[in-house]
Length: 160
Image 1 (cartoon, rainbow, N blue to C red):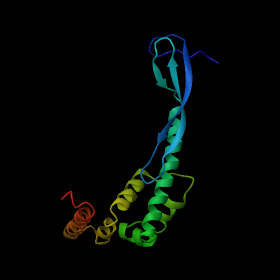
Image 2: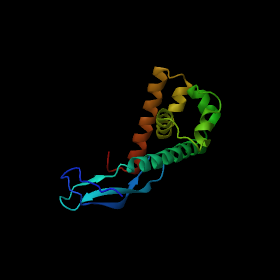
Image 3: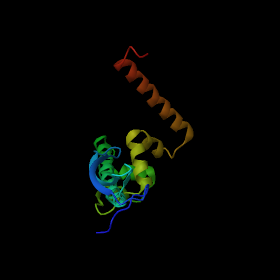
Image 4: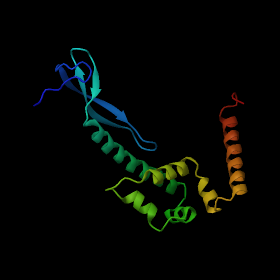
């Protein structure tokens, strides 16, 4: 095994320490991954080991798949069918099913962002169904904003 040199002071008194970090993705549980850190006993400098990137990327990809499945399950539970979402968004048939069921690949960043926004604001599906017509979208936004304010006033009368 080759000696590891400190990139700060140049000494060969570097040890590798394992520790865990927690990573998370929206609408998915958090996960803990074990990473390695190089620590110089001479100067105290510490840096991540180069192998950490692959470990973190692999776990993030798994969390993104879980996030997509959770988002789609929650939207289905709200009464939105896969077919109706695909029609509203102008997606080819079975696209959302592939996003949900493909265990071998992570969904694209755009697909994940789209579905997270729709999960956060489910009324966006109704806006999409109305072909993103501006006035209808504004009306929908204002209706939902008014409802949110009413809910806040009811739940926390001291706030307003």
